[in-house]
Image (cartoon, rainbow, N blue to C red; front, side):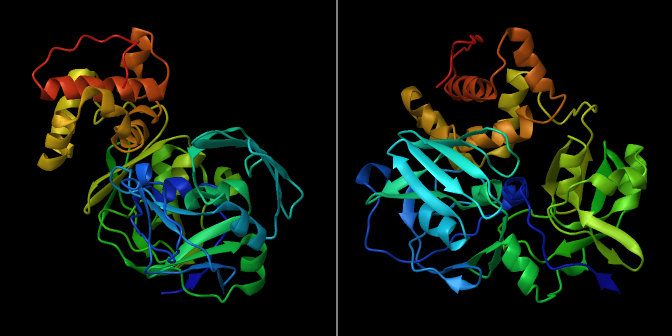
Length: 377
């Protein structure tokens, strides 16, 4: 098997690719998270953070408030930015200015629990992201760094690596990034296509399903979508395309972004790509279908936990189960569930997921719930 391609490429969209990561790691430290937050955040001590292959003497925190498998590591914002070649200026408690090596200025607005900013890689305003502050040091989600500056995250066992684009360019060791062939079926708009898949070795070890970032044969996919190969010349990919036995392979998840589509993987035998104009029948069409789907998705102990949670504490599910609902049921283009809410006058995905959680809680407790767009945890 002949394989060509660079080891890695800086990717701004690493957040969607790492939707399935559950790697937790970091350095020990004496500082402690304020007691009120200890359920959600704690230091991890089994690994190290490397930036441009240099070990950083910093603490890494783990956010344990996510549902299923998002990356959970929080790292010190200033130390990491400076190690990546940026300048960092805290102009006031509510404002941070970061200047990047490519002469961009990132303007951060620091709230009580979240940070929003402009001037990132994609030059669009970003929605607020949670941060934590310990002894005056701001810890920021690791997976958001590639949105700020040209860099890439990868894992070696439990060690975390954060490399700048310039460092990668100058120090590419040419390591193989493609692993073994994966025995998995590929579907485009629910129709099976004959496309080979190979493991993406740059992805971190995870628990659970993790094939959506693997390398897939490009031409059968775009043929099923009615797209010609020349049209893909301007596409952005999270990892460099590779050539295997004369065929172009790309990371499956990047195709979704280039067509404004969506992805799905329910088991280890199949994975799905949907175009923006395709109606996904696997997404619930209304609240009742959503409740039944959650019954099947959640473990019995999770169902019991939600049933017994006081209604005024449902907000704690917003960044856990609520995130999963938004990513999988509400954000995909042409979502039946989103259309249900639009027709009821609710246009905010955060509000939609809140209504679903509130209704599901009452459903589990045998209480009737009538949709009120003003209702949310």
